[in-house]
Image (cartoon, rainbow, N blue to C red; front, side):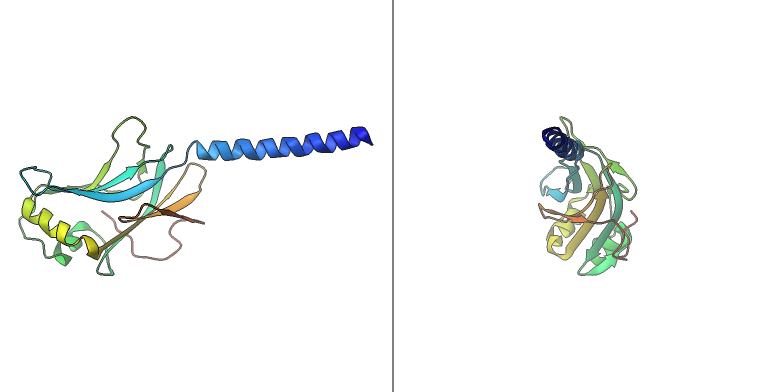
Length: 172
């Protein structure tokens, strides 16, 4: 009986250690996206940058992106510029996020500029429209654990999988 009790205890201990090692492995590749901006109204040529950072320790596989202005879904930056009444003169650069992988910011700068506005007048339109925007990025870890990062919020929400809500996808 003593040998059986010791065997059951050893088995339970082994199962506990296995679960602990699995959680440590997941934590060692946990991505954490944050969505924000930087704005300069003086002579800086990069006046407005909409930036995505991975402050976690593992890569973030971007599965879906949704962006809205005043609650209206946008499909690309041109629609956003029209929605915020930006002037026709536009000097900007954009980066596509959908389907991309954002590496962690471990000891290096890996910020992704979703849009970089090099025109102070257009940048001022973006800055004055901050409260009108909503962006959600659904991303997963290498273990297919998924979260949604939200515009200007420091929290992420865990989700079962990305793309299940049927929202309009932002393509650019």
